[in-house]
Each structure stands twice: as C-alpha cells, then as structure tokens.
Image (cartoon, rainbow, N blue to C red; front, side):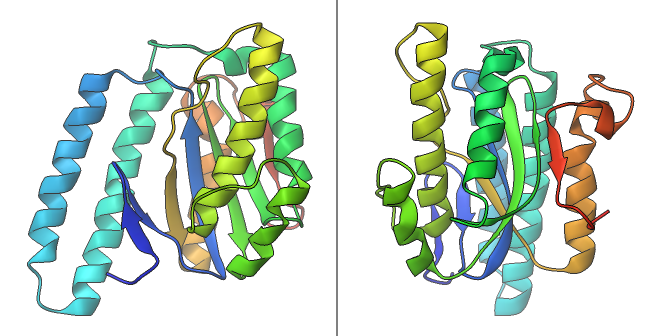
Length: 222
C-alpha cells in the first residue's frame, strides 16, 4: 500500500491533489453490533484481496471493497432509528452548512454536500498538504499527518463545540472516525454527486433533491 494509506477501524487512502467523498456521523448513530459486523466483512474481503500478486489489480480490488463497504455503511446510517438525530435541529444544521461553506477555497474546493438527520455527506477536492497549514486560521490546529483526516478533525471539533453549546450538553458529538473515499474519474464524480444529492430522497425526506434545504452542489456541475 502507498504511504498515504492508513487505517484505524476504517481504511483510509488520502493522496494529495485528489477529490474525496467524505461521510461523518453523530456518535452513537449506529448500533455497535452492526458496526462490528461490517468491519468483520471488510477485514475478510481485504485479507482475500491482499493475496493478489498483481499490484494494480490488488489496488483496484481494495478500491472496490472500500466502496462496497461504504454503501452498506451508508444504508445503515440512512435507516438507523437508534442514537441521536441532532441534525434535525435547524440551528445545528445551519451551523454545519455554514462551517462547510466557510472552509471552501480555504481548505478545499467544495463540490457538494447533504446534511442528513444523523450524518453528513460531502464531496470536495484538495491540493497539496502544505495548504492545510491554514488550519490555524479556522480553529484548533489538527493533529493527524493525513490531509483529509486533518480537515475533518478541524471541522468536527468546531461544529461539535458549537452544537453542544446549542444543545446545552457535554460529551462526544461526532463519531471519532469518518469515511473517506477517493473519486478517481469524471464518471465516478458524477455518480457520487447524484448519490449525495439524492440521499434525502432515498430516505423519504424529500421528493426531489432540491426540495431538501440542507443540500448543495457547486454551480455548473449538474
């Protein structure tokens, strides 16, 4: 695996100058047994792929495995009735939308997002990692050497702090780890944009994507 690949519970591949689909969710928004089951399936698939001798085919297989894992993970998030749904609160959702837009052109090029009741989908492009040194201008400096993880640490720290004040609570707001997936081709980007925008439709929160107030796509892309 390349040096910009790492994993905690989820696999992460974070090259510079790339476009990402990122999902982060509220703490406790998925049952732990469901998470453990999906992680077990992921690890089994990765063990099988790691035995492939052809480097290119092995890398392609890892890419496919992570995409399939995410789709299962996302279906669980959409249908989850457990845990908090704080993102239904307009004041909190507006805070998150504002934070996503504020970092546009500072830390990333924002392409699209949808804020759901218990998780957030976003698509953005990043340049070179040195650009992320600007993090100290928009809040706490993040600790991870991995560029997308640093962006998400910063964004989640700020929105958690503000959201907990609104809710008059303390404690973990976001799940610590986020999902990130590299988008490699124009066709995949188009599919992913529509996937993100139609999340509210799939969850029966709106009839069409543009009826959902908490969605955004960069002008001229669709």
